[in-house]
Image 1 (cartoon, rainbow, N blue to C red):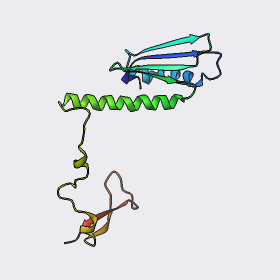
Image 2 (image 1 turned 180 degrees about the vertical axis):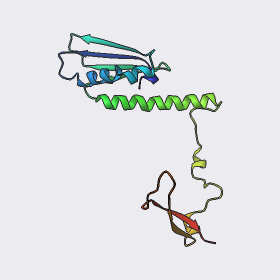
Image 3 (image 1 turned 90 degrees about the vertical axis):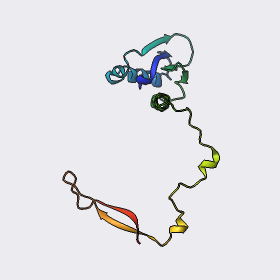
Image 4 (image 1 turned 120 degrees about the vertical axis):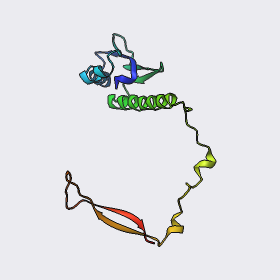
Length: 154
């Protein structure tokens, strides 16, 4: 999770009963696996004494900062949102390294076009039959391993 982040700031009042998500997220940030994924990520904890609600602020490696209300959002949801955004960052980076435009924009008229070499179901109706095949190998030999594929009978 930390590999997508450059900085994490967790703010909470230890006496506030709504600090569970903050504390859980802090625990996730302090795991060995998380720290090894990005040792350069700064994890800053600010213990407050006022009535300010607990909040988590993360800065992604591309500089974008996002703030989460830790009273309303569970720690696992925050983690999942960070992972989703991180995967988008990785995808964007892969496209840029390959010299492709980002984001990829597919024109509306191309979305409705059929792929060359494919036919609609009505055109193939009655010409395709299911065929049951047994799958086995030296590594995986299960007598109940079957799959159904559709083949064209000519």
